[in-house]
Image (cartoon, rainbow, N blue to C red):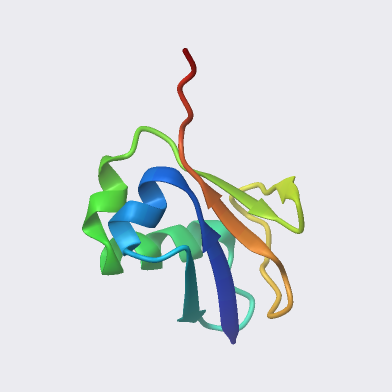
Length: 80
């Protein structure tokens, strides 16, 4: 299935784009997606945490993704 992923902050810098089109197996979980992304972009492994939002809500690791889901990678944010 094809997924479109929005990227923010340092994740956007690592990938080099604000969005990413990715082919994944049907029924891919959030954990599987993160493993695939970390294989393609090893620098993502260095982030202390990386939240995944699906359809404007934070997703659990076992959430099964669907082709039309709106997916966003949200890196840690620091304030000042």
